[in-house]
Image (tube, rainbow, N blue to C red; front, side, top):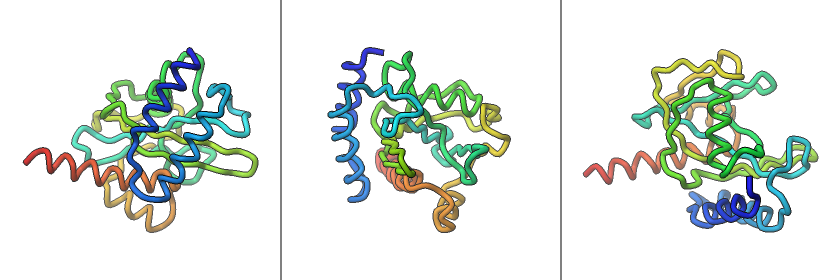
Length: 190
């Protein structure tokens, strides 16, 4: 991975992202500051602050999202991970992690734009999460590195998880972007 091109590509994508609310706008500003100041974005798992990619996966009809249930976490999450040396872009990272964690192979980026951003702070670790929207066939059975609780959720099921506060902030923001994506799709179909 060429760090300068990777970093420039990421900054460009972040700069063109349109936050859905003030909370996400604050995350975006902080992530841009971190990426601009970082000497390297390949920081590894033990770095106290690093950029990570997340994949928000929808079926082709955009009616269901795929969530994983990682063994070390109780709640449904999306495939995510750290930048690896072979990744040319952060979108490549999201695609690789989606394949690894679900066992599915045929993902198509909805577009190359950043879908949402979030910052996950836990104790001495800060993750600057950048999300991409990926599309996958729903009829395929997930069988990746996660346990067998990986499954498809409808928008209503996801909203129920939000009400029960069983999902992270980034997934809540992704759900808002998902609703907007559906509205734009319906508007463009007219």
